Length: 205
Image 1 (cartoon, one colour):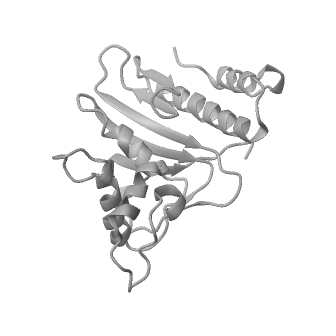
Image 2 (tube, helix red, strand yellow):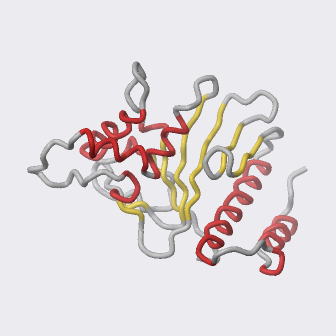
């Protein structure tokens, strides 16, 4: 039976009570609080939609992994849920790749492309393609926007989920080349449509 607003409010209140929290470093605790708050809201959203069977895993497959069934899953969405205190996420911080803005840009070396493996987006993508029997996709969730240029102008730094397949073509090309360094031999080209970024509001942010 779906929870009403009063019940949801009570769960969120208890989850955010200072006297009930595990102690830890202040910076790390902010990130944990944000992950917990977002995950609770996502669970309420799914439960409220009438979906009767789903499964969440925490700190096992990325920050959060959401399966469409606890018995026979056919889809998993893996989430990186990151709190940022200042500014927006920028291209370099998300991908470890140089900016493709310069018109006279030289070809990026294989060594620099390989740095994408250790980036937030590279790590998320590696988890997505680790699944072969279950359909998979990855979402980067943050309270801060992602300052990534889109096709036709504009930026991904909004509250609406944005597919990385919507990035400006130069950024798409470079990101695909970087993500290919994560691949095993014979894998198809990276599908940026399987990756999304999203800014979400957080009452305490």
